[in-house]
Length: 342
Ligand SMILES: Nc1nc2c(ncn2[C@@H]2O[C@H](COP(=O)(O)OP(=O)(O)OP(=O)(O)O)[C@@H](O)[C@H]2O)c(=O)[nH]1
Ligand SMILES: [Mg+2]
Image (cartoon, rainbow, N blue to C red; front, side, top):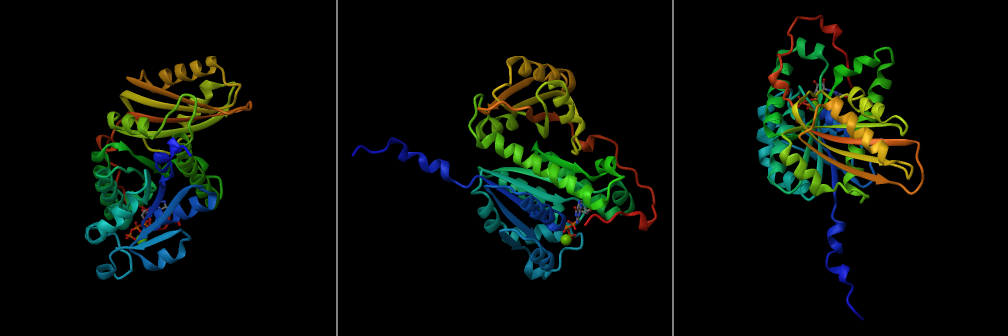
């Protein structure tokens, strides 16, 4: 029997592709919530220095770092102790994560564990073939203002992440204030749903072949040339492409500022009724709203049936660094004003 010519390369399509990794308390909680919302085909990890917290999260693989020094009790905001702990476990940790093609790393900024591990692991994974995508939760302004240690930890972490370049997603808790009349659990559910949309949009974009294909290779090369980048997502009725682009910008909970020379990789996911005119109007709207991009890549996936809703995923490069903007205000506040975010 003739040998199946695909057999020689088919194994390449079988590798594990995506991982989400929670780092520290807030990061592990976010991964737990993502798993509850459903991330099919994505392997989930929880990494913490706090054993009790780690036992609470329902995630496939749980890793306790720094047992010897931190004794499973968390770092109490000590980034340096966490880096030392990570150095000890480095080969095993990086080895376990680098077999994935895309690794989403999630952490709340301001504590010790997540703040130290987010840049540390992003940098370590950038030296492998895996594409590391750091996602940080920026604390509410009132928390930063009230606590100089947190403020320092946030600032140091942001500097380290921005120096790495590439895709950096910073979810700003402060932007949740637009929902301030809703009950707190509902607000955090909205944030988690948004996080879920970011992760699944990117996974969908690179995982499923499409008509105008955007694959992992195009994403990596776009990021290599794009400086600091962010991710925008939206869904809107196919009849209003301009509103689709507007929603991607206005509905974002990310902290970002598009610079003077942006680049954009756009992906549209829609039905068989998506017309060339609609594509054209999306592109025109991007040019108007983002500024004239120096580089634009367009991908589409058109499903066989007609769809009312079209989804836009945009990886925007040339985003300006937060550290070039004014430092956060530091005014004393009453401690009871600090919101509990757990
Ligand atoms: N727990 C929690 N923290 C959040 C959330 N969103 C943002 N954060 C912020 O995340 C920051 C870090 O908190 P933790 O994750 O508890 O800290 P950690 O990384 O475990 O670090 P250590 O406990 O100091 O070792 C805090 O400043 C919180 O404001 C959330 O949904 N849950
Ligand atoms: Mg902790």
